[in-house]
Image: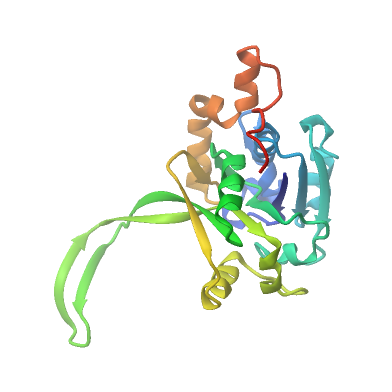
Amino acid sequence: MQAILMAGGEGRRLRPITAKLPKPLVPIGEISVLEMVLRQLRWYGFDNVTLCVGHRAELVMTVVGDGRRFGLEIRYHVEEQPLGTIGALARLEGLEDSFLVMNGDVCTDLDFRSLLEWHRSHGSPATVAACARRERLELGVLELDPGRGRLVGFKEKPDYEFWAAMGVNAFNTDILDLIPRGRPFGFDELMAAMLTRRVDVRVFTYGGFWLDIGRIDDYERILDEFPRRRTSLLPDEAARSRGRGHAGPQPKGAV
């Protein structure tokens, strides 16, 4: 199984933490978030990983190497200029018919193999993993009667529930026709293009743990939660402690 990791961003919202480190290499405990993701991919049966790197690419490549210490075959695609959150896909060669695409800084206990198998079983060109979130808006929110400027409701610091894209997706090569070459292209633009063309996009809803550490408060949260979530975030380590060695789950048939 093949996975593409987008690991080229500058991590501006995490400064000053990312002043010297690229975002995928920020530490969580004694490891980096990227090491955690690579170990998870190996555990769930992925063996072929492409890292799309840009900002501080040489540092990521030095730290990760060729992937042998993770039991992976790792290739690199170096962005000469920033290509956005999804644009690098248009430049990759050797993509399998279906593959995983994810951000290199996602903290989740999602079973990536199950996501890809679910995607393949439904036959759509794109599957987006989504997690339910609740956010509190620290403002008083007015509800207006449209066109009349009259107040019809008021909510003080309301809670909103929504489905958030996790930064973990499964795609078929069909979607590459929607991604332009030679300019930055974001995941939001890809979603807009697929909706405009009425592409069948499936949503894999997930009720487990997920954090995008792009913000300081979320990064501080994962630092706080990592010790008690360690066994779910590092299943290979948990298996070794139970005497099962380092291999991941056995395949469940052809996928």
